[in-house]
Image 1 (cartoon, helix red, strand yellow):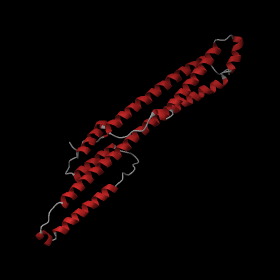
Image 2 (spheres, helix red, strand yellow; image 1 turned 45 degrees about the horizontal axis):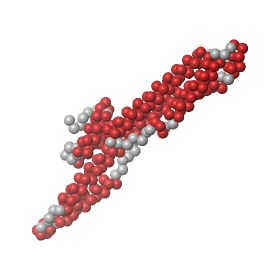
Image 3 (tube, one colour; image 1 turned 45 degrees about the vertical axis):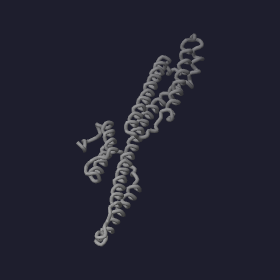
Length: 238
């Protein structure tokens, strides 16, 4: 008990309370940022601070701090002959202070973890959206090509020359491309790179659309560029 200084621990408690408040405000600020980012990119975002247990942790720590502070202040205001008795009440509170300090450190780690997970979730969902947009663009193209080929009329002479079989073969090839495109599933990535997503859009434009982006791909491409300017290496379509 003689090593427990009331004044020093009051200052520790006040500092700890301020630290918790700043940290929690930082969490809420980050969450607003990620929600706005997800909205601008048109991707889902499921992280919610009020579902992470952080508010309960903050409330628990702050309630512990208030309780500790009151007991210390009461003990500090008593007469000397009763101070020793009152200070014995502080023995379990000392452990409470230590617990609160450990919890505050954990809270900071939780905030950083929350931020990292949020960014990774958005990039993962963005990657899936890029792949889905590319997939849908290909399927639409292949269906249009198939329908266009199917509607071609083959005359008697053409049939005699085997053009009907050629037409049917082209239609079958388009049907196969559609089936393969519909069956394609995005592969899980160890790291979701914005640069790689832009490259995927660029490759699709080059190989499928004569170097042009479809309206849906163009909209997504611009949204990515707006949100991740520092991460993109160059504008592929300038």
